[in-house]
Length: 137
Image (cartoon, rainbow, N blue to C red; front, side):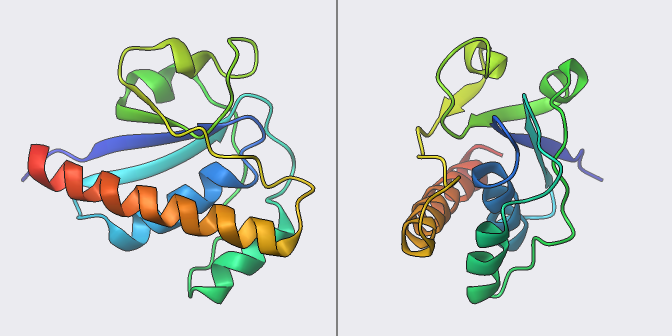
């Protein structure tokens, strides 16, 4: 039985980008990996537009909830994906060794068309990331 490896997706509010990434990762990943998303300043609910654009592609993230990132989450993760926060105050995970930085714009306060573009960019990056994980198992 192989060990489950955690992949942590981090953004500031854990309401958009990281939740979308978690949803796509669940769709495309093998059973050896478990996605977790968290934020440094999580809000109370996921961005409704993020939920809507994910439903458009057949993924329901409405049951996911924003979570506060913890040291345990970071320490127990095989890889950490920083979705786009760029300073130590809002995103301390950026300064760890096993972090991948995707620099994706925050969908907060964006139009639905812009949120769709962000969703599509995240899906592309998730597909590439999952393909790399398959190679490096």
